[in-house]
Every structure is written in C-alpha cells, then in structure tokens.
Amino acid sequence: MFLLVAGKTDPGKCRANNEDSFSLVRDLSLFLVADGMGGHAAGEVASRMAVDVITDHQRRGLSGREPLQGRYREDFANGTNRLASGIRVANHAIFQASLDNPAWHGMGTTLAAVCCTGDRAGIAHVGDSRVYLIRQGEIRQLTEDHSLVSEQVREGLLTPEEAARSTLQNVVTRALGQKEMVEVSLQEIDLRSGDRLLVCSDGLSEMVPDGALLAVAGGTKSPSLACRRLVDLANQLGGKDNITVVIIDSVGNRLVYWFKRLMEGFRRG
Ligand code: CA
Image 1 (cartoon, protein in one colour):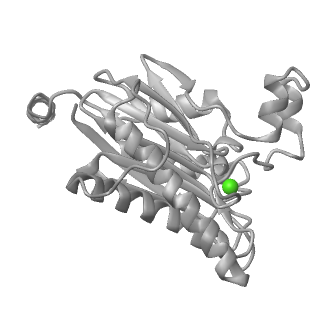
Image 2: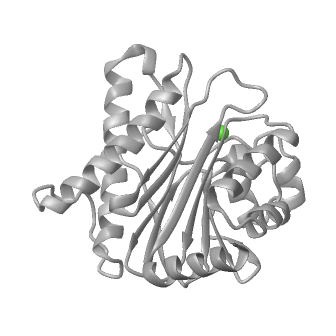
C-alpha cells in the first residue's frame, strides 16, 4: 500500500511550551505521536525520547540484531510486535532517566503509533493520544483512552456527556515512564485504498468533536492541508493544550496514484 503522510504540531493558545512530539519515519512506515508530561520541560524530554527510542528500536530490528522485549504475539505481524517491543524499551528508558535526573523526576508521555507492513497497519497506544480511522465518509476511534474518565464511561459510572464536562479529562491511567513495566494496547487493521488514519494528541481531540474532525479531515484531500486546518480549528475552539496531528492516507498502488494525479493535472490544465 502506498502511503501519503503529513504531520503538524502547535503549542496552542494557552501554553508557552510544546511538550508533544511526533515523527513520520517514511522508510519504516512508522508514525508516532507522543504527549509528554512533567514540569521543567521534562514532558518535552519524555515525548522526544519515546519517539526517538521507538524509531531506533524499529530500525535496529531490520538488522536482526536487536532482540524483542516482552511477549511475542503470534496473532500479530512482526512489525506490530516490534512496535510494542520498542514502546516497552522506551518506557524503560524514560523511567530510568527520570530516576537518574532529579529535574526529570515523574516525567512521562502518552504514545499513539501506527506501523504499516503491506496492507496491514499495526496500531499501538498508551494513554489518551488517539488513532481514528476515516473510511467511506465515517470516522471511528480505534483506540480506547487509558484515562480516568474513559474508564468510568466504560464501567458505566459516567455518561459520555458527563465525561466531556469532567475536570479530570487530563488524568491518564497509563503512560510511558511511570512504572518499570508498561502495558501496551495493540491492534491491527487491513488498510483499504482511500482509508485515512488520523493520529493525534488530546489537544486536538478535546477541542474538536468527532463530527468536526470528520468534516475537516474527511473534506480536505491533501494530508498536509488537512493537518493545518485541524490545528487551526483546535486553536479557534480555544487551543487549551498543545496540538499534534498526523495523517496517513492509504492510496493503493503508487503508480496508479501518480498516473491519476497526472491525469487530473491534464484535465485541470
Ligand atoms: Ca496534552
């Protein structure tokens, strides 16, 4: 599957720093969003470490000399297992760094990741950064937030409306760097031509409801323009937090894609 990708991050309207990090590693088909937390700019350190360590682990995996960390799941592709392994390695690295450096004590980060192999997309997350699928005019949140309010909704203790109004929205129940071990949520989907994956930090999803995400992301063809419009909308709606968005378009066969683009150009010409 040929992928077109774009990403954008923005500090938002209320925060001086941007503690989010993202990475588009095209040659590995690896796309990451991390939302850091911790005082004294430690959140930036944690989110950047997560992105860098996971990328490095994925790249070393190609050489076959980097062993996998944690349980291997036979029901998932190798790339997805490698992704989960990288997240565990990053968790440990952040946890250790926070112990070694008093200024970084307690730092952590969420992580939402997509790693594609052929038509298969491995999706991993920890915390409340999200992955959405936009397919045939509909949007579906693929990840379940590891957050206090989401867990209360799942247990029937809160309605989704109450959750949306809660002042505890930012409390995550899982993050990298908080404990020696981390539990990674994993899934895989088969990508179809025309699918769009949207990966974001809560600075986007808390500001922009799903319907508006679909209206903007579903109605803007260019991934980079869609990212820019989503960030602009989150800022218009308050921009209370750092905003990060990554868009991954599955456009089928590369040659067919460029041929179609060429023909569109001729028709417009
Ligand atoms: Ca955030």
